[in-house]
Image (cartoon, rainbow, N blue to C red; front, side, top):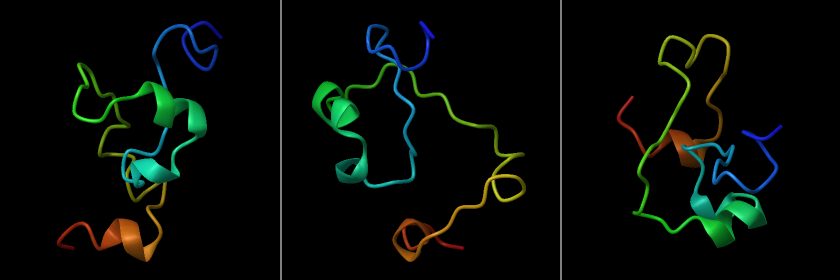
Length: 64
């Protein structure tokens, strides 16, 4: 609980492929874009196999 979701650690759970304007309000107000020190993601092994990336807007960002 301390690491995820209590608001005191500066850790936010958001979709890194999603447009930041669509993030939850707490993340939008506390995260200043371009100032990240650490960004953790799910390893590529999981992308497309257990977690599907869906949505034209997300997919158009990349050459597929």
